[in-house]
Image (cartoon, rainbow, N blue to C red; front, side, top):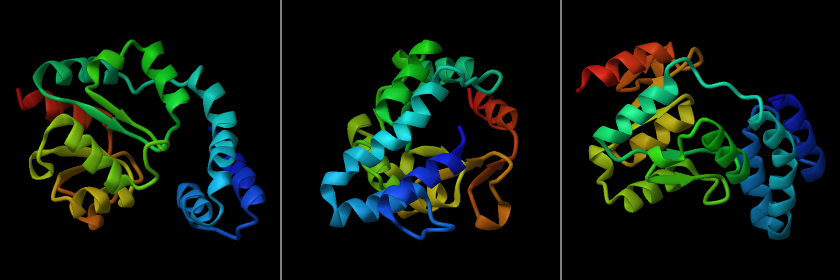
Length: 180
């Protein structure tokens, strides 16, 4: 996805000078004072996301890992991706049945609220949940609920203080597979 183009289109519509601020925070804040624009702003992001859903490729081994995890535990997905693009990706890789709950930006633009909703839906206690994210905001949201948080990817930083840090996806995969 060309996130610069998405950002440009969202900021153009909102007339918001928001350098360094997540576009989803811009949408959340702007739609509070302009509630009728939320659908239009989501459509702007969808216009970029839906075509990208047709060409996206998962990390090596991630579909297999998700299938394995779903056999061992209740697995949910929280994402700022839109429902249409998210559903398309899950359909393309035959992963929808692996997930007990899928929450997208249409459900909430607040990660902590998404996580709380997922735990409620899964009938899980947040302090017993294991959440994987890739951003500082993911860590903060998970921590605010008392979750164990793993950060995955090259952008994640150890000095943020995650419970676990996996710079490479295969490190997370090996860790989770070792839990039996």
